Image (cartoon, rainbow, N blue to C red; front, side, top):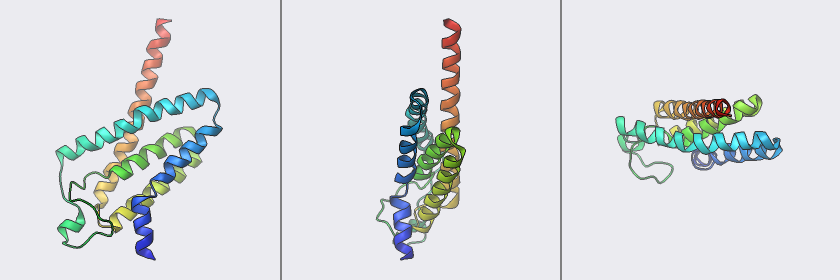
Length: 158
């Protein structure tokens, strides 16, 4: 039973923040929908790119490789650093937090659960999870700042 929860959390729980944010998007006013969509369109790929760049500078294999144990989830041997799943969940949680703090906090708990499950599955170390979460949040802050600056320049030109 416990292994089933870990497998579910490590593989599929990342869908929950995406669906929750999508559901929240449907109840937003039209102008806020555009803002949230633009933020997500910029921040989510940026989070992935930041995670890939971080992985170029630091490499270590997954715990199941170093411990010579089979992982709970079939997984190719590659760089465990940082966690892409948690970077995505952290970015989604940060986007949600910028529109609804309660939803954002709830999604951060889900991101924490994803990280714990991926550690339990032998796919990541805690540091991989922490850095993934930070990179997801940084991507949202950077995207929000870029949008703000773009809008500021656009208003000055009018």
